[in-house]
Image (cartoon, rainbow, N blue to C red; front, side, top):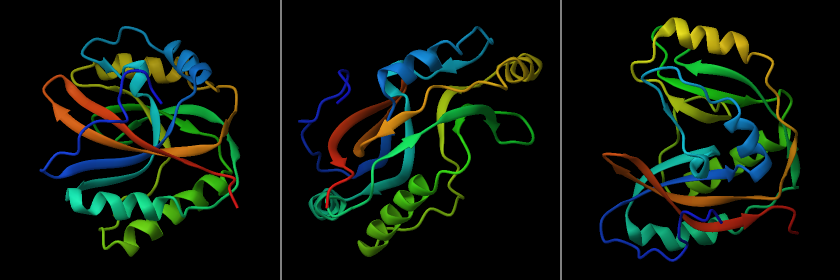
Length: 195
């Protein structure tokens, strides 16, 4: 569990904004930290918020949280090794808004886990995500960063690859939007590799 978030936060009466993610281990956080450099008008993701989103759930009523947690505990699948490599921007065309690091190609177990999560959410009547799943870790929000500086950074970092790391599970997070940026609250972990 990240040290900057709590697993015992009270459940509010209003809707909960949730997502499922793989937390970045310390060695990966350090490697991604080495990618930071001044780009001007750029907000780098704080180290404690670095993660790979498996599925953005969106806002749900608090009453749906217990059955969601129960269904997530039924997820089965093998542990696997994930390789974080490559950098890019969203959107790929036009003015870039997000700087990201991707995952190496050929990740069938990651894609299988994503499909299982989609099935669980669909079974609870939650809407599907219309976007194509592009596994990545958000490094920065670019804001007013000059495009030429972003392009130069992408060129310098194009060969980036971190050491592969074992994925032993994933976690459910709540996300609260605040003026200073989103605050993520760790709610519950789910282990892979269980029978």
